[in-house]
Length: 34
Image (cartoon, rainbow, N blue to C red; front, side, top):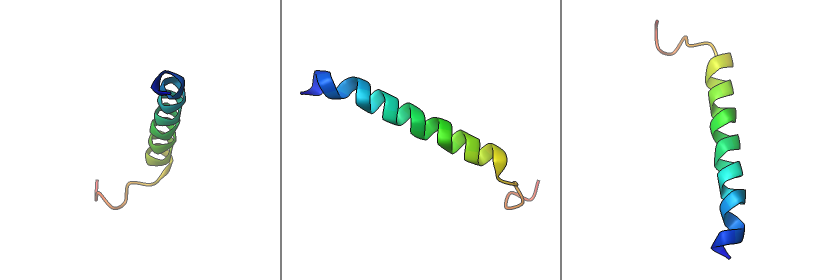
């Protein structure tokens, strides 16, 4: 079962990472005070 879930988890993690990166890039960094 793990062999079948491997690619799915990899894609899910990659998607979440890309989404998080996009959100951090788009969101104004006013909280950091930079």
